[in-house]
Length: 163
Image (tube, rainbow, N blue to C red; front, side):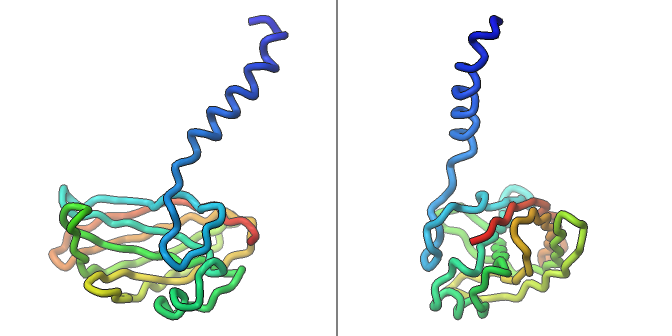
């Protein structure tokens, strides 16, 4: 390849990489539409159970949603929301589970992440708050155990930027 073609290829490649990073979902109701954190992390238990985790800056929550989850919006915290669901996505049911969760920052500092149940209609989610000092990258380890003894581990990372 001639060197004169490299400068033209770099913007094309960068554009393709940026396009591949898109695909973020719309924020849930009550969360301001700003640059999204990454998509939900998902793990499966067998063929019929999904564990889905989301991480949202609490500063983006409106007052009603913050009250529903029992958190105080702050630029120094993120909300971790975990749902355990069974059945088809169009007609899923919440499953009770025991969760053991931890968050680690880039320095390796561990925060225990107590996740408490919060009901919303007929759904049950588990919520907790992690203290942050943006910019940072957090790694989450969430062990999930169903009442019937089946288990899974959800491991994922999320980058956190100043609001």
